[in-house]
Every structure is written in structure tokens, then in C-alpha cells.
Length: 498
Ligand code: BES
Ligand code: MN
Ligand code: ZN
Image (tube, rainbow, N blue to C red; front, top):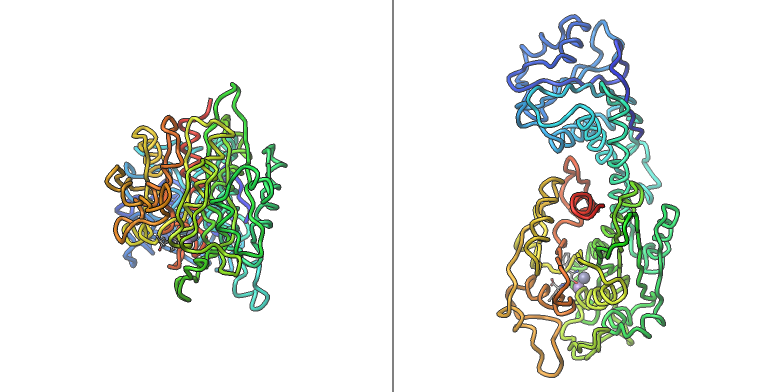
């Protein structure tokens, strides 16, 4: 779908989308449309329950007297509540309504409601962003009944008073949308296609944007002592990979911020095998790595003035004669030893070495890891919030605020020595599982043992939000959601750009 910006015109073809405030108060564009179409909106309002509440739609097909093929009056709600994120949701819902309707083109002519907190060019760009995010489709593997899935809506134009300023705002947002789409695609790809090697190959596309991409193979990781990560992949036919993606758009030479992602391309559980039902969807266990890759894409595509390195550990967790056993002890790159008691607690093993490598190699000022780490976080938070764990209050607040602004919410969990005790091992420095309780926290305590004391660190457990089996939401499709790209991009934009 093509998104563009244009000055309002006297005559509009395709779907003409205009706004109404609460209590059916038409905006000036809506009044204009109503008048042009012989008062059709005024008449329709009389026989409809439409009240102009946020995201309500009153649709008139083939309105009389105007060139437009349909007229949509959409609710903006109360002017003082209207915001960038409300505009995104509205545009997404309207786009969803039109996208397979037979309509090919739409023009959004939404005036900034008086008293709203955002300016016209921002409103225009965020309408475009919402429409764009809603247009996502993953049809790579469909061969039949393509017509049923075909989107008819090919272009959305945003009518706005300051086209140049709207385009400038859109430049950055369209880069973020690209990053979100990349993350969604990676999560949606099946695991027979998106193997660790294939994932690594796809990250190389980022070099075109000026990202320095380095791929370590198993021999190189072995040399560095990454036995925790390598142990997870040793039962797989697929070779493990570690990818570093460095974007340096900072004008000063500055310590980077490191983003570390869990990239388990398929998690069978290993010898501690999952059940059939529990294994379904485990192609998405690389959602953290996908979010990191999508974020680096977004930052590079919008030329962010920040120094950021994305590190992803890519493995496949499989049972096999060569697979890691429960009871094995491995020595991690940090030198700490780990007793493996459950091969299904593999994400933390991958992250242990990826986190250590990130700190040793890049000396970052802050490290944020993203991982579909525990089923327990889904039990606690469902699909509404990701779990946040951190050793730093300031970083936690920054992340929580970025999440609120972007509609990717996080909830901070406690950590402490009482939880850390639960991963003591009888024969090694630690074991890779805690007891039956506080599973998400003991996983975070495990990760913290691979974080240097002076490093500001946050861990996002995204097991509940990286993909969703439920129905399409306005800004999140079914399956791969791309969760993480928006919150990380915003965090960096607000606090790590110079
Ligand atoms: N990838 C899973 C976590 C997961 C579960 C993500 C469901 C998304 C949906 C992780 O590797 C795992 O298996 N964790 C175990 C840990 C346990 C063995 C300590 C879990 O949560 O059951
Ligand atoms: Mn697992
Ligand atoms: Zn896993």
C-alpha cells in the first residue's frame, strides 16, 4: 500500500474520510463534504447511532453529487483526548475497514480538532503510520484463493495543510514501520526456512543502510568460549550463529547502547521435550532477535544520531544423540559454570553468552535484552504487557515511558537476593532453572549474573507479546506483532541521540 500527502482538494475520488467530534459535531472538512453531497451526512446522522466517539464509522457508499465513491464519517472522540496514538488507531481501523472492500484509494481529510495536543503535520504523519501498520500482510506461502486475501486498497493519501512538514515527520515514521514489518516477517517465517544461517543471511541486507554486520560461526564462538550458547544448538543439524549489527550515527564518539536478542529459531525443548501443543508456535522463539533486527533497521533507515549495536544469538533447540542433556555442566564465556537441569530453559543460556560478548566487545553504557523467555510471564501478564526486569531505576522509567507513548506496554517485576538464591546449584556456579515459583524472575536473576555491576541493564520478557494467536488488533496483526521495535526506537530517540 502506498502512502502519500497532499493539500486538500475541492474534489476527492475513492473513499473520502472525514472526521466528527464527540456528539456528532462535524469538523470543517466533514461539513464541506456534507454540503458537497447534498447534506447526506446530516441526513444519515439522523437515522444512525453514530455519536462521533473515537473510532466509530458511518459509511456511505456511492454518495450523491460528488466524485468520491464513498464517504466515511469517522469519530475522533473528545478533542482534548485526541493524540498521535489515537490518530494511529483511528487510521488503522479505517484502513482495516477499507482494505479488502473493493475500494482502491482513500483520502483522509482529518482536521486537527481544536484543543488537541498535536499539530497538523504530526497528525498527518501518524495517520499515515497507523494506515501503514494496518496494511501488513504475510502471504509468502499462499498459493491458492489469492483473490480472497488480495488487498484492494492500493493507496492512502493524507490531506494536510503543510505537506512538506508532514513528509518530514513521515520519513522517520516510515522507517519505523519498515522495521516493524521486518520483525513481523522474521517471526512469521516458518522454521524450516528461517534457520539460524538464513536469519544471519537476512541481517546482511542491513549493510545497504550503513550498518556494520558481523557474523560469528560456531568455530569462532567456540574460540571465545561461548559454550552456553553452543550447547543449546548442539542437538540441531543447523549451525548456530551470532550476529552483531552496529549502527553508529552519533556525531560524537560515544559508548554504544547494546540491544541483545534471543534468537531460538525453533524451540522443541531439546531432550526436555515440549508437548505437541506446547511446541506449536515455537518458530516465534526468535521474537527478541527479530525485534532487535527490526530496530536496527529502523534506526539506520531514519539515520538516527545514536550509536547502537544489536547482538542476536541464533540457534535451534533440538533433541538428538548429540543434544545437550539435563545434568550437563557447561562453562560460559564469562567463566561461570552452569548446570543444565532442563534443556527447555535454553533462552537464558543463549543470552548468557550474547550478553557477555556484548559487554566485552562493545563496552556499552546500557544493555537491553529482549527474549521470549518464559511461559510464566504469559501467566502473569497475558498479551497486554511485557515483563520488565532491571538493575536501574532510571533506565526502567525511560523504557516504561517509551512503551506508554508507543502502545507497547511494560510492567516492572521485582528482583533480589531471595530470588537469586533459587538458582544455586549443587555442583556448579548456578543451575538453569529455579523452583516452581516466580519462573520469570528466576530467569531474570540468571541473566543478571551475566551483567557487569556497572552496566545499566534491562530485560524484557516478550513471550506474551511477540506473537498473538488472537484476532487482528488495529495496530497488531495476528501472529508476528513486531513488538519491541517501536518501544526501542522511541527510547533511543528520546534518550540516546546526540
Ligand atoms: N521459549 C520458551 C518460553 C515460551 C513459552 C515462550 C511459551 C512463548 C510461549 C522457553 O524457552 C521455555 O521453554 N521456558 C520454560 C522454562 C522452564 C523450563 C524453566 C517455560 O517457560 O516453561
Ligand atoms: Mn524452551
Ligand atoms: Zn525458548
